[in-house]
Length: 477
Image (cartoon, rainbow, N blue to C red; front, side):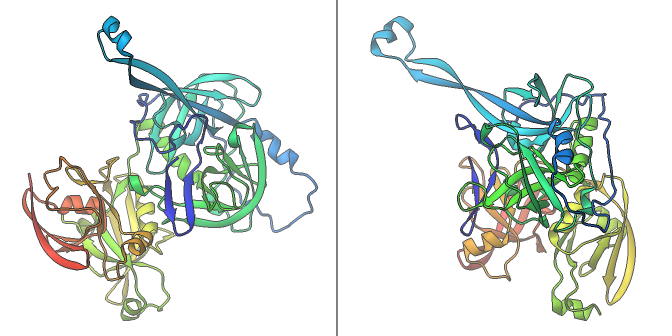
C-alpha cells in the first residue's frame, strides 16, 4: 500500500490486499478494451433528498436493500513473473542458473452496477495492473470482467460483465448534496462480506489532499463519517433515498483504518468520466490556457470587490490558447464559469476539465474594477499519465504540504521537480525539490502551461533551490 503523507495523517487508497497487491501500482495499467458500441442506460433521480421534513425513522432496511443487490466485489489478479536461482546440482542439468517462476497476487475492492447490461463503476486503483478481473454479485453469481477504460486522474474505472437484467443503482445529482445529509457506505471491507455503514456528509469539495498528486489528478471528494475501510474502494455511497451519490475511494487516518474521515468521488464526476470512457475509450478534457492564483484581499479591494471575495486572478495567458483568443488578460479576476463559482485554483481546474473540448463557456470576471462577461471556446487538454516536464524530469504542483515540507515562503510559487531520471539529459542542471517559478520570463504553476511555454532551442528558467534564486538556461531539442 502506498500512502501520501499529511502532517500526522495518512491519506490512503482503499484497496484491501490478500498478498500485497499494490494499491498504486508501478506496473502498467491492464490493456484497455476498445470503446464499445453498447451504452449504459442509467436510472437517474435528480430531485433533492430533503423535502423540508425530518420524519422519525426506525429502520433503513427498505432504503438500503435495493442498492445492496447492485454493489459487487471486484477481485483483481496480477501474475508476477520471477527469475529465481537454481542449485549448483540442477545448474548442470538445466543449463541456466536462473529459472522462471510465476505467482499470483490478488487484490479486493468493490464496484457498483450502474446499468442492467453490465457496466460497473469502480476505482482505478482497484483494477490497476490486473491481468485478470472477476466480479461477484451478492447473489453468488461470478463473472469474468473486462476493462472498458480507466482514468487515473480521477481514480475512476469502468469494467463490463456479460449479463442482462442486472440489478442497478439509481444515480442522484451529487451537486445537490448538503453537509448533514444522511448517507450509507456499501461495500466489502477487508473481504468479510457485504457491509452497510451509516453516517452523514461531513464536507464537500475536499481537495489538496495529495491523493492523486502523482498523476496530476483532479480531487473533489465528498467527506463522510460513514465507516469506510480497506476493500470498500469502488463501493457505493448512497443517500437516504437509496440513490448513488458517490464512489468510495479513500480514507484519512492516523491508524491505516477508519477514524471517521472517508472520501468518495461525487457520482456526477464519476458518471461524466464513465460516459467518456465508454464512448471514446479515453477522457477528453477542456483546455483554457491560463495560470491563476487566489485573489488576495488587497487585489480584491483594488478591483472594487469585497476583501473576502473568493475568486482567482490570472497570472499567465498562454500564447495562442483559447484564453488569449477569447481576450482574457493578466490580472483579470475570474468569479465564475457559467453558474459555477470559481473560489480557488482547484475549482477552476476541475470545472474546465469536466467541460468537453469545443464547448463555448461563459466567464464572469472583473477587469480594472468593471464586471465583464467573456465567452471562450475550450480546446483539448493534452493528457499525459506522467508529470513529465522535460525528458526524464517530472514535476508537480507546489501544494501547501510541499511548501511546509520544503520550508518555502508564500512568495514562492511554481512547479516542484519531484525526480530526475539518471538517463535524463538534464540531470546535471535540474534537481529534485527545485522550484521552477518562471519559464522564459513568464510565471508558471500549471504543468500544461509550462510545456507550452517551452520552445525548441534555448529556454530560460527562473528557479528557487536551497534558499537561492537564479536563472538557468536549458536547451530543448
